[in-house]
Amino acid sequence: MGLGPLEIGLIILAILLLFGYKKLPDASRSLGRSLRIFKGEMKGMKDDDVRTRDAATTTPVRGEIAPASAPSDELNTRLQDEARAAELRAAELRARAEQARTADGPR
Image 1 (tube, rainbow, N blue to C red):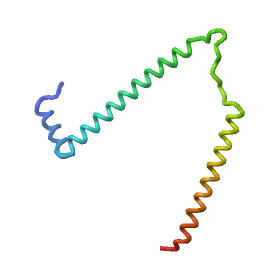
Image 2: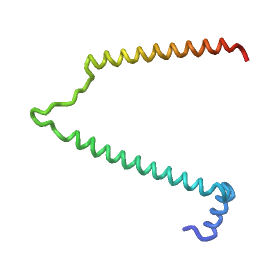
Image 3: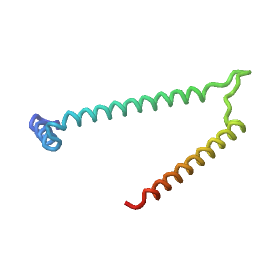
Image 4: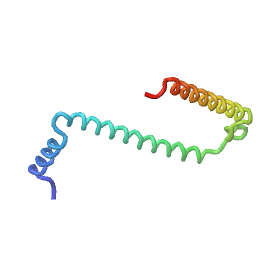
């Protein structure tokens, strides 16, 4: 049981009535973009699966240096220092914003 010409015509008429003839090109364009993005993401997921499978099956060669699994203590310390500096800067900016708000007074 397939769609005949009458049913297809009714579907097209319903779509035109719902979206209007001016919005139809924009709707189809955005649908095309969405499908293109979806297709690209699916391809990326498939490529990631292949890479993960290949990486799991390969064994390191003797003498090969394995990548570090955890950051060094020096890196951890530097990252913590940067985080503290960012928190202090954010607190300073919040204090300045609050001072500016109170200086302007109620509106």
